[in-house]
Length: 328
Image (cartoon, rainbow, N blue to C red; front, top):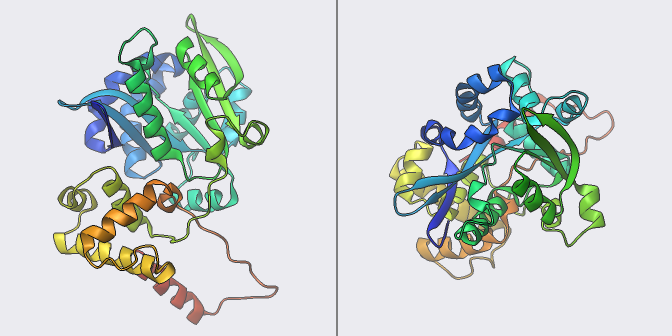
């Protein structure tokens, strides 16, 4: 996705060490041992799909300008941080470093998303490019908002958490409707935990974050593999690049697109209409998905279990087979 001379995309493992220099200002939020271990820890967490990064780059040159770490956490770690003088990012990363499990897995994210119970923690949110005195700030801010919507809208949240220390970041988040949960003094700087939750959204429906809390339910329930291809395409990733990132052949990419069109046509025959060419179907579908990002999010509703219902081995095998087919 591109705005003016800036693009935003999902960062991969190969990007991580190249962009860590942007995070230097946030060192104050972490204990020394956690900070030293952070690059290797984040690489491990990305591999396990427990955290992700969104990156804003200037073009040409693809110079990193801003990054945001995205994670979904168990809310008990926020409560733990509030009882200490530790920031929430430090509490969460320290727990992960010591073998605890603060982050939701993709499967847990799908279940909590369907229940409206997700707790989002943004970390390493570097926004120096948004300082008001910088002449390019308006363009950067527009791209940042576009990036934030793309990677966050469509989830059903219970709360969003940001821990920041620069005054301009606190002011920006307050202008978007966030509240100060608490502030602590760290090394001559003040760390401020910002919060926006479902109650705030209900009380202030016109706040910028409020629309994030009540997204529509997905209609198509694309598989995770289908969602990754669709997300890449929305971020202007070519099929060749998608094949490289998803470890697929050219034929594998074509097969996945066919499975996506088949699913859409089965559930909504009118969406793609009488379009027969793959390029026309893709253009129409991506236009729809840009306005319905909930289709890209994990979403797992629990089927009600009847009293005394015990699934038979045959039913279980049938369910597993169905799940396998949906992954294509």
